Amino acid sequence: MKSIRIGAGLGFYGDSWRPVAASIERGAVQYIGSDHLAELTLAILQKDRMKDPSAGYTRDLVPMLTALWPLAQKHGVKFLLNAGGLNPEGARDALIAEFGKRGWKAKIATVTGDAVLNRIDALRAAGESLDHMDTGVALNAVRERLLFANAYLGAQPLVEALKSGADIVLTGRVADAALFLAPLIHEFGWAMDDWDRLAQGLTVGHLLECSGQGSGGNFNSYLANGWESVPDLGHIGYPIAEVSPDGTAVLTKAPDTGGRVDFDTVRQQLLYEVHNPHAYFSPDVVLDMGTLKLDDLGGDRVRVSGASGRPRPEQLKIVAGYDDGWAGTATIGYSWPGAMKKARATEAIIERQLAELKLGYDEIHTEFLGYDSLLGDLADDSHIDELNEVYLKMSVRAQDRRLAEAFPRQFPWLALSGPPTASGFSGIEPARQLLGLWPTLVRRELVEPQVKVSLQDTAP
View 1 (cartoon, rainbow, N blue to C red):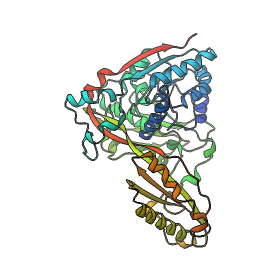
View 2 (cartoon, helix red, strand yellow; view 1 turned 45 degrees about the vertical axis):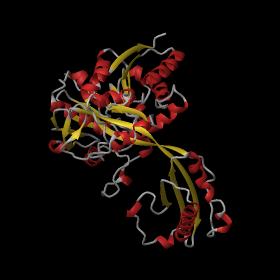
View 3 (cartoon, rainbow, N blue to C red; view 1 turned 180 degrees about the vertical axis):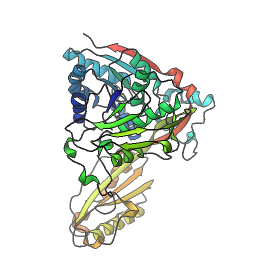
View 4 (cartoon, rainbow, N blue to C red; view 1 turned 30 degrees about the vertical axis):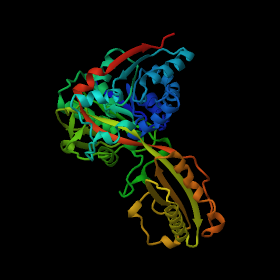
C-alpha cells in the first residue's frame, strides 16, 4: 500500500494559511489537518457567542477555505479542521453559504457531541465528580458560573466522517493530533486497538499540529544552529508527514519554502507541551516516546519510527469555562534616567491609593514592560538602572464590572503630579470580562454515545 502525505494547517486561531497553499501546490499532500483551538480559544469564542448566538466558531475558517479550496479541489486535498469551536454547525452553515455564493461543490461533515454543558448535572448524577483535575477543588465552586464545557474527542468520529466521503471535516473540541491520526486510520485500516501504530500516528499528529513550529519556527535560541540560522522564516513551509502503512513517517516540507526540518527542529516540537514523554495521553492511545527514533536523512527530511503505545485512557478530558469577574487595566510609561525607579514609585502610589480607598479588588497584578513582563522572576536586574524606557502595566480583578472600569481612572493625574517623563498612558480602557478554565475528567462511555457525524453537500 502506498504512503499518505498529510500537511500541517493552522496551529492556532489567527495563524497564517499562506504556507498551506505551498503544501497543497508543491507538497503532494492528500490531507491538511488544521488546529485552530487552544483552551484559551474556547474562552474567546464564548465571548463571541455571548454577543451573537450564531457565532462561536473561529472566524478564520471561511476566509481560509475560500482562499484555499480552489487549489485543494484541483489537487484532491481533503481538510480536517477543529474550527467549529463551540458551534460546529454554525461554522458549517457559514461555509456552505459562502461556497454556495461561488457555486463550489464539497461534501462537508460535521462532528458534534463534544459539548456537555447541558449534561453537567446528569454526568454528576451518574457518579462523575467533575472536580478540578489539577487542584481537586469541587465543581460546586464554579457550577453556577459555568458558560461552556467540552470534552476532547478522539479520532473515531473523524474516521467515520472520512468514510462517508467528506471533503471537509468540521469539528468542535477534539484532541489536536486526532485531526492527523484520523486520515491514517481511515487510509490504512488500522484497528482502534493497534496501540503501536496509533502511537505512531499520534506522534505524527503531535509533530504537525503547531504549523511552522515543526519546521523551524519559534526555534531554540541556545543551540549553535539556533533560530538565526533558520532560512527565510518569512516564507516558512509548514511540515508535511509522509506516512507508511506501518506508521513510520518522514517529516519534510514543500520544495522552495523557508524554514528547516532536521533532527533539532523535530525533537523540539516532539517535546512541546509534553509533561511525561513516557505517558503522553490522548483519547485514542497513550504514547511512550522513550522508544522513538529520529533519523536525520538530510535535505529537510527526518524519519520518525519506533513509537510504543498503551491502551487508551478510560476517561476523556473536559475543558470548561466559567465567569471569573472583570479586569481593569492601565499602562503608563517612563523614560531614562531612572525609568524603573519612576515606574516602581508609581506602582507604590497606586497601591497606597487603592488601600486608602478600600475598593476591595480581588487581585492586583503588576508588570514592568521592558523588564519582567516576559521573564517574570527570572528577569536580569544587573542593568536595571540603565533601561531606556519602562512601561508600568497594572491590572486588577473584580466581580463588579463598574469597579474594574474605575481602576484606570486612578492614573491620569500622574501625568503632571507624579514622577517625571510620564508618557504613553493608554487611556481609560473598558473593563474586560474574565473567563476561568476548569479542566476535569469524565468516563468516555458517558460522552461518546452522544457524538454524531452529519454530512451535507454544498452542490447547488
